Length: 259
Image (cartoon, rainbow, N blue to C red):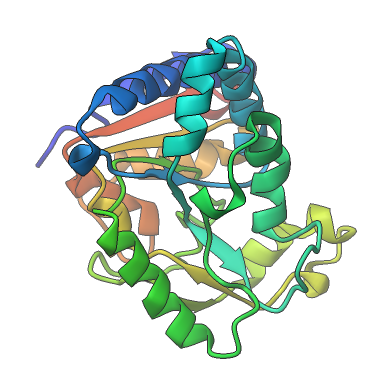
């Protein structure tokens, strides 16, 4: 079996963890801009509370670039998010498109069309999922993928059980996931949309490099379970990462060494 994770980055705090990952992403973006256009694969982005300090740290670093370099980054930017809720109206502050605009698009003044997300308002959700997968594939697939880890082991919105060949699809969100994401919905899990569109493990595992970010004591149990599995299990979607040759795990002390 491949070594998992390929790199383990453990830090005392979530802030330190996110700052060091932001440093690596900044370096990647520098290198990415120097690549021939045909070799520039888009970034794969995630949402949620775990990612907020990461995006804040990345924005802080990128805003120190020269005006010329920042302008080139804005012109060349291409990213694809993992998922989007179904059924929330356009402009709803709880949509992930709004989240990405608030945390990355607006601070960096990125053209909105360069921040790709599934169409959460599509009349044909299954068709929208297929179209999103085709759009990503036409761009060469993800180069560097960011992932969080759900309390039930989901990555993206890939709920257990799932398989490694599952492509972009409409998913029924589990009660556990809706509870985990209820903070933006007034703490009412019933108000969290029941469905979403998510990239599948097929698209995630096709990335060149994956960065799994796990912070906070609430994630300690599921992280321990992931790290002690001898082989992937459909009941723990993140375990399919064991088959990827280049996964970096970024974790803080609360997640790695709970009291």
